[in-house]
Each structure stands twice: as structure tokens, then as C-alpha cells.
Image (cartoon, rainbow, N blue to C red; front, side):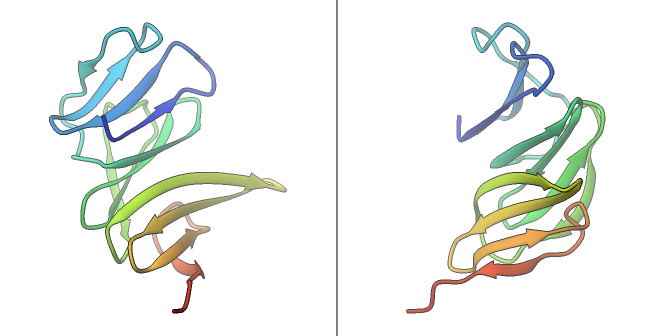
Length: 122
């Protein structure tokens, strides 16, 4: 397992990224089953109810509104993804991706485009 996300509505439901693909648990993580048809993802963020974001190796960003049954490709982040999180403030959602050698990238349009939010200069 590389990353996992827990449903904000059902604490016993979660998804995990694995070397074999995306896996889902509905029993609090005791068992996992493969999610057929899901893209190979390395990091995840669960937005609300059945809405999740994921980023694949190489930076392709994916979104699902049905708990992972079907995925749409959104944008791309430059660099290899290391972490993913979602922040909602004042009703506005911002998706953040930490990418190796690129800093922290943010998207205010659901993962369609990204801008650098933080870059450590050495």
C-alpha cells in the first residue's frame, strides 16, 4: 500500500493504492478487493461522499464521482506525485499535489490545471 483515503461519510469504507492497482475496503480495512477498471494511482484524496481524486505515476490526475467505479482523466501535474490533499475554505475547493522537484502545486478547477503554490529554492 502506498496511500489510502477513508470515506468522509462511511468510516468503514476506504480505498488504497497498491502495486496491483486500486483496492477498496468496506470493513474498516480488514479486507480489500480490487477496483476493476481503475487507473493505476499512487496518491489519493477523498473529497466528499463518493468523490475522489487520484494521481498516477507521471502526474495524470483522475477524478471519480461514484466512489471509484468510473474515472475521468483531468489534467496533469509536472513531476512525480508524492502526496495529495484537498482543502475547502469558504466553499472553495483547492486540490494540492506535492511533486518531487516541483514543489507544491495547487488546482482550483478540480485538477484540470495547476500552479506552483510553493517551491523551495536552493
